[in-house]
Image (tube, rainbow, N blue to C red; front, side, top):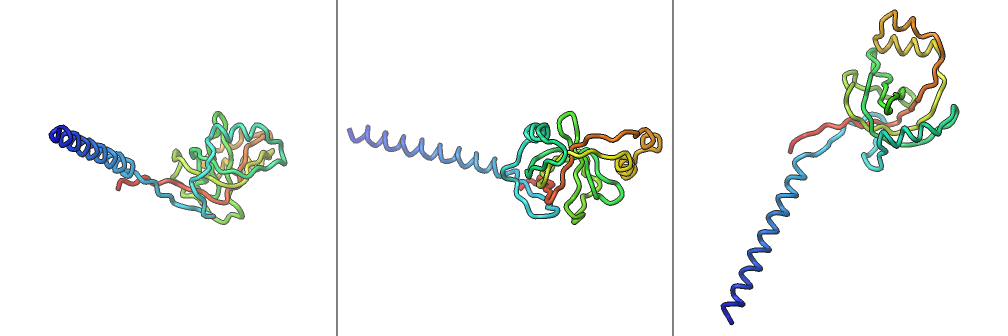
Length: 171
């Protein structure tokens, strides 16, 4: 009888040690990648971030003059190459023009293609031919591409008060 109890106790110890080690391995694997952010503008967090799909749905319900405060993740399509004073971000099949609150901060010019998080006000605007040409020039478009802009355009717009650019580091 003592032998059975001894074997049972030894089995429990071995199995509990084995489970503890596998849990430690899982924790270590999860900690190997940490996300740090470069912050531009106001300090914001990466919590409660809408997806690109969710923001596209929000834009569909907006009319010129409407605004909605939100935070979302998207990819950068283009950045002003003069000083980083605006950027265009992906919105499904469309894109949104992002400007920065009170021109209080600017983006690095080399972030096209990166995923970012932006916080601020989403709205829809009617962009004049003159403004479209100005942004096309800042974006490095050719004279022919600029001359081809001849009509006002309904655009998705965003005034960002904070932007996070992730930096992935191995620990």
